[in-house]
Length: 394
Ligand code: EPS
Image (cartoon, protein in one colour):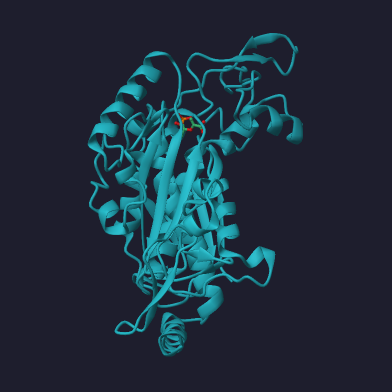
């Protein structure tokens, strides 16, 4: 069983991650993890915080001489901004500090966890909630996801994402559902890039982001995350909580701002007859595998991976941190006020794509550990190879 948890507040000392269940003997490339962290910081429309941070992973436990030990992996991603928040985020009481020193927030932002969290956790200082609800936490997910992706890469799985829409601007139909190779061909590390294959749509998206920025507004969008090289047989139809698509959907919905998740052509499929939705089956005798000319199922049928590319779309609402705030109510005096203005991004859709890659990495690694088990990578590889032989001989 693989378990992955994070801890950390946006302006605390740092974010930590905890991963248990990775097999021993897995080679860890810190450069790969740091590259994913850097990619999460990129993208047109990001805010001032990204200029402060240069996220890097520090491994605290579970890795020795570049290889996992099979013991829990713990890691840290420091918050450089912590230096500016030592009083406001001090774990110890701060004597004689004013509300301003402590950066108290009492006017919740609509759309954020602020109000629901403050009521639930019974605090009138909304900062107690917003610090953990901030999307800063996704840096730890990306690092943890990179460990997981390192495991599944040993078995030939590759994950990538691209942006399909930002606000009302959407890529042309030919740029949707791109094969993995075409997604990887998009500059994945372009500092100001949107990771959009359709250059004309990218220009319209950038213009929309500029406009929203000028108006003190924010924009959401749609990302598609794809995994290639996924073996058939991950997940199971036999119990509701073992269905792979259900597990992927849960992981994707947990991404801040995610409001809908689509597997394959799920949304379009709801409006078409079955004959135009399901992917006819054929057999490639030379490759000893079943094939499909189309992949509208998105690589999962009956909750089980079918060997085709896994395709998942995540629909993201606009970030709730608005420079031109919406109406709110002060949680102390109950008087109407404008919502608090926190620094934020105009658009973080490309970054959400990197987070979606990480979350898909976590779910796939979980499914691999479950199906192929083993305390060492060698044992897991033996189990995997044995299973793949059965699949080929089926
Ligand atoms: C983010 C860090 C945050 C925000 C943003 C995402 O840092 P700060 O609050 O210091 O600017 O920029 O999060 C939100 C706007 C939000 O609403 O969650 C990050 O590292 O991704």
